[in-house]
Image (cartoon, rainbow, N blue to C red; front, side, top):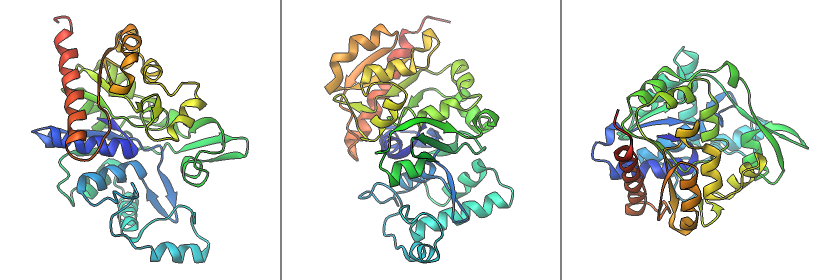
Length: 320
């Protein structure tokens, strides 16, 4: 599974619930949101996935750890260190401190992530898409800022002109991510932000090559429901790259694998069933099902529907 953010975490939980061999789930995560802050390495997408799968995430806020305190954050603010609008909870800081210590001792991000995940039985293998740093910055008329500042502080209210992943051209897909893509039976694109989550993963040199040569069907789950981005600010990202917040338009943005794009299949929301013909016309097999990732059975059913579509794609593939 390629994933990032809250949508990726919720889909990962559904996929784990829907899959008998849960330990065979491999998640390749976005690292474009990563940032060094107050001397520690913060990986928002990796942490959202880790905390959700470990059952320790704050489900009310949608980010961070449950049962948090914020004494250290208050001290940092008093010293004028860090971003006062980007609160790091004390438990969350423990994760960032541990990761930073591992990295400074010479571990790769892949190795550090594995060590963090080993604390809990998460039922999946969590992997960064690259061990290199590819921080996303947002170019606006007010200047250039880190993606997290644009997303959290401005709430995406400052129009973005473009997104830039610094160091992207020098980065490489991690060996572990390449291996799990090559070995996969099914490759799923979570309903994560198509621009700054999935898009950043796809921009890392080697990722598209790995996907193009993979034998597994590639099926995406639409992040659009009823003609609207589920995570509202994702619409601002799509608008920046000139893509309408529409299920068929996002499918077209990814493109059909048979025509040089990415997708073999696209799972749309039942509210967007009217777009099925448009998606099929792109050369992408499509199905419309309920897509709200409500915890428990609803999210698991979304995952089962994605796997069912994957099976249909495989069954329809020409022999050989």
